Image (cartoon, rainbow, N blue to C red; front, side, top):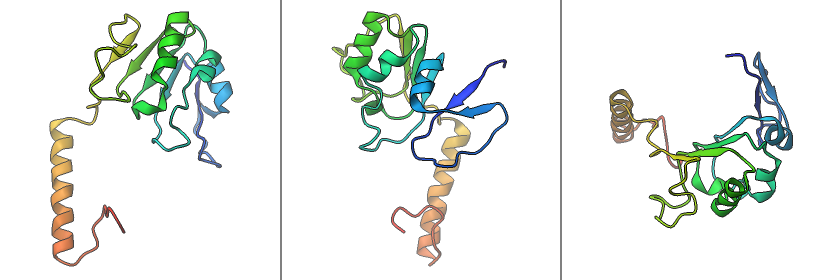
Length: 152
């Protein structure tokens, strides 16, 4: 698609080498990226990882996308960055509180898009989810090790 893809992973010490894909430090990623898309779990170390300091590193033309967990972003810091023109906009599939309160500083803005965090949902995905859950029950009841144990 004619773009340079850069990524950062705070946990991976030996990232895979994909053609056309470059691993960089978090500061370089924030300074260089036109679009920053979050896809990480919520841990104490990642909570609030996108804050005023990191938003200030981004280009004024950049967009922030959160498809992971709402608390990765400090909501007020994002609103402040948008107000100051530090970044161009945000697309949020998740929020720290869901549904977001009507007094959220991100609601009613032209430069913020919300989606309902249902990207997995399709007829096929729902059928697969139900089938895997039923298979897990059958496995346990017949003495087999389940494929997706909650507490191995």
